[in-house]
Image (cartoon, rainbow, N blue to C red):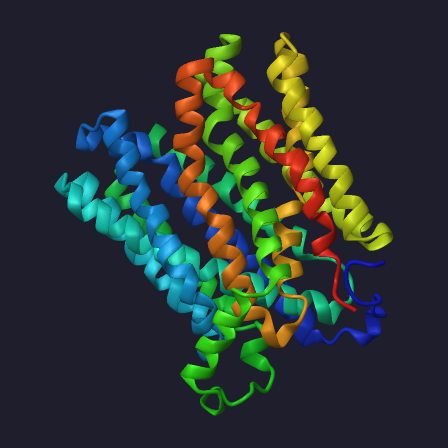
Length: 404
């Protein structure tokens, strides 16, 4: 069974849909750029505030907390305002948070201001994430072939670009109070332009006032009682944990476990991102040919193999090859989980919101869980929890099959 509807002929795809596809890719990429830019300057913020590792970890939780708080209602907001206006308003929060965090850290050395900025940043990111996934799924349905993973590939490329620009800014001595506000302005302007092409901005929209707030809340509560939606959320949670483990720990694990330099550890993480980006770009062809269930099952097994090789190889080069397989293997699960949640367009806002809430708890629980395991067995071997979680998630793959 194909993962989406029968592919449409090129002539059948309207210019507005193709423009919306470009707009969604731009918004995904700029969201990744904002997040990559922030994380690239975390060392400078830590130095400016003179934080220990423990206090820095607590500070970074403000961002995750903002995202988790936003997601339960972000579907309702997208349904009320439309996805185009939602991503613009959310990105305004993202940009404001970047500005406040950057200025508070670098210019004022004010920790509470950074925490408030990060909470706003996380809240805007969480809301934008739900809205842009809803819009991406709508574009995917109209095009008639799988493209959601490519939107997530754009996000990955944007985050890499943000990290690279952040590294350049740090190298030339550009203050965080200057770099992050400049980035915030560019991200906001670009997102506003990209959102103008969204389907919700150019297609006639249903009268939002015709659906009462109480009815929208009932739809959200109903989504929390749907077994398929909850199981998709659990599948996305494992996918998010598998990605987040690499983002947070793979560089440190290679430094501690294989004795490489910090620069080499960062390069290993780059290998993971490259593998994931290739998987999200090329994997759409496999999804259209064989469907979600067999492709996701195969890629999960590939990820299990990759993590196992990365941890147990005993040889640096072989372990790096394992990291590349890890990136390829986890590349499709998160975007296709979001796509599955949005299979029915009229119920997509509530369902994507529920799946996002469940999935994003991995970003709250993952870092401390792996950190505690790392204290006991070493950071490298702590990564073996990833395949231990991935193997049971194979039983959840069938829930991503599109409803008849």
